[in-house]
Length: 436
Ligand code: PMP
Image (cartoon, rainbow, N blue to C red; front, side, top):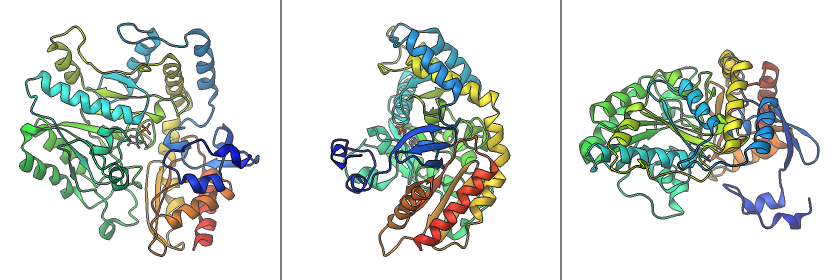
């Protein structure tokens, strides 16, 4: 591509100057592979950005999107509706654990998070507890880039450039303990006591000021931090005891990523709200949303003093084309047994990635479901430099990986097979040797 045409796009979360001198472009995608601009097949180790769980361009999704754009290009959802939106909500209510049966739609994970936070405030206010306005997040949490999301989020770089955020937010410690848990296979044994941070923050601020606590059940963007055994259960207990809503941000961990419909199922803990996006449409069309417990919906709706009960929504909420993509995606997951495939490969996946233990500069390896994090020792005091180089080398060898700081994050489509898992591990082995 002519380098001059690369000037105008201000790319998100990207080293813009470096990219424009050394671009990595994809022009097509099918199944497990991207096609690069220079015609190479690139194995997708990241499901795009944790989203193409059904693989790329699944025929059911392509057909549904194509048909819908021809028949219903847009539907206003404020006081109007279209039947498929209700069918999708009913379908998703089956996917989420009970009693999370009320589905609110937006367009992204960031919007889902901000919607959930606002719903939490509306819920408490409707019950005469309008003083509950504080949110508790967690260090290293990622909850998108809205002001709500960066406030409850705990990734320093995403906050410090902007100097201000929501007032009143506090954070629990993150759950990663390299001294005790490095290279853990299976459930993370140590760290349940970290859940007591919530009790300490309640003591500090007063339960009457706290609306909700939000965590990723398995922290993804921050470099794959599965929760210690018993941690989520303890958060659940403390939240219930203090009338604090528990929100699981399942934008990454939902829709089969861990081999179960939601991570809530995997860990056996039911929150009061789940935020979702990405895998709901396998990334094909933007969509996100919130699944809220019936009691939250009931409190907001039944106590409303106005005909409209919730003054919140998006022009593109339940967009017909996104709804069609989501319904087809759910069908693809079920008909092709994709969650089951992910579950059956969890051990093979874990074995393959943990075989990289001992490769140059590997400081830790964490796997769960079809997710993997390979943490590298940073080079010459330059955080992220080594992993960034690994990402470029992997691309040159036909593998797309994602890096976050010095952590390689992997999350392939759920349709992956054993041989492709082997290719990922072999390629990474070469890449790590070269990056030494
Ligand atoms: N929450 C979590 C847990 C995420 O991982 C992400 C995106 N990686 C988001 C929210 C934000 O989603 P989006 O980029 O669609 O706004």
